[in-house]
Image (cartoon, rainbow, N blue to C red; front, top):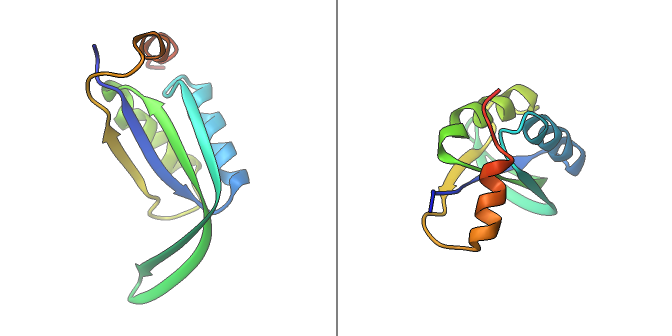
Length: 108
């Protein structure tokens, strides 16, 4: 079975997460996007501890599309340094789902 990658992203809002998801999934760089609203983040930015309400965006893709999907996220994102972290799932999972995911993703 082929590896699957989850791209974990944070966004300024649910609306922004949806806009980015439409851009990435629309280009078939990911087969699916999950948006989780209401995340509270604390982080260092330019020497200051910041707090913000954000949304989580999880994009489901394959390893050979991570670079293109990351570039698409960055192009559509409002942050100058957006969080885009690949999490490799590896082997296993529902083989029917994995087959679907692979069939619904492709390079432009």
